[in-house]
Image 1: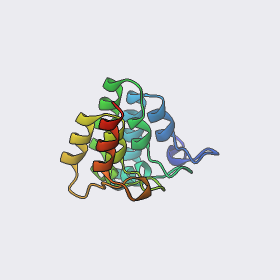
Image 2: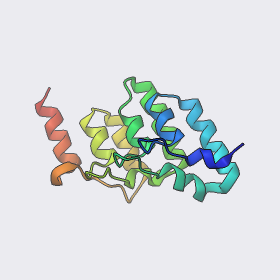
Image 3: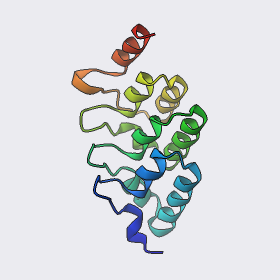
Amino acid sequence: MANHLLDACNAKGDTPFHCAARTGMVEMVSELISLVRTEGGGERVKAVLGKLNKQGETALHEALRLRYKETVVAMVSRLMAADAELAQVPLADGTSPLYLAVLLGHDDIAERLHQHDEGLCYSGPNGQNALHAAVLRSTSK
């Protein structure tokens, strides 16, 4: 396989991981992780999964926006199993995966992210944090 394609970016800066996560292709993400691990080990997996697209997002951010809860849970589990430190990567605007999970109502995912990583990033946009997201969500119900 042409291994350099595993982290090649399209015009939007998306890697194959971003594209697979955005479309809910859990098994594809698993296969891509396996290919990267075979090619370069765990550090290479972390480097590829940590790549930001032009919106400053990782594949984890994309996964959190999926429509179906079962798919979100499966995708986040696969990504976090491959690199627990993904929860530390905020968007360019400061939106962390935890903030996004709380804002979108994925409470069980927020709990998993919190349990996975002691260095978890809590930040959100405009100086907010995950607690702000919880308040915003509760007032919009």
